[in-house]
Every structure is written in structure tokens, then in C-alpha cells.
Image (spheres, rainbow, N blue to C red):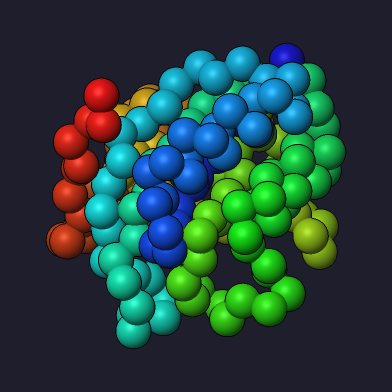
Length: 163
């Protein structure tokens, strides 16, 4: 079984409800066990800043699927919740964005998948929830909590639990 870290994001519709359903779909379709789930955080938009704030979270799952099979599952789940990657503007508004951050210690450079995620340590909106569930995980030689210490977390706020 592989330990996989996945970032979730969205800023269209009821994002928190989408996360809950999407996580169930990921676990079901990937025959995965949910090991950890971060809180939800409201975060300023990144890249294309002319849009609503995002909600971001991270999960850790265990799955026997290989990275490409899991990527296929993640893209199917995104589509189920209205995400059309081919039509979407880069870093634009979206119902659901699922990014594989790390798959065990696998290092992979393919046109459709790079592991670990190449921009992880530039993105506080991923590092904040990731540090909540895996602060001591080492990715690309950097401990998550140390990577978080190197970025600004301005504008990122933990949302209250939904109960």
C-alpha cells in the first residue's frame, strides 16, 4: 500500500460539501483508506487573483493503485463534480481541484504527472493544511513544517468544523 497526499481546492458552489463527497468517491474508486483529513481553510486566489477566495484542504490515503491509475481516478472525480480541465482557464475558478502532492517517496517526471508536486513548496494554500496532517513528512528532502516556515501564510484562515 502506498501513502498518498492529495490537495483539494475549489471556489465554486458548496465547496465543503463537494470535498466531503469527493473524498468518499476517491476512497471508493481507489479502494483507498482515508488516513487523515485536514481542516478546511479559506485562502486567497493564487495565480489568477481576479476571483473568489478558495477553500483548500489535504488528505492522506493508502491505496494499492499505481500513481497513473490514481491520477485517472482523481480526474474522474473532478469531472463528476463539474471540472472540465480542457475548458478551464489556468488557475481560474473551479468546483474541485485534486492534486496528488506525494506518492510514497516516488519521483516521477511524465508529461501528465510529476511527483512530488513540483510547486508544493511555493504554495502556502497546500502547505498549511498539509502541515496539519503530515508536519514531519519529508518531500523532496524538505520536511513539510520547514517548507511551510518558508512561505507567507497571509490571508489563510482555518474554517470552523462543519460538525
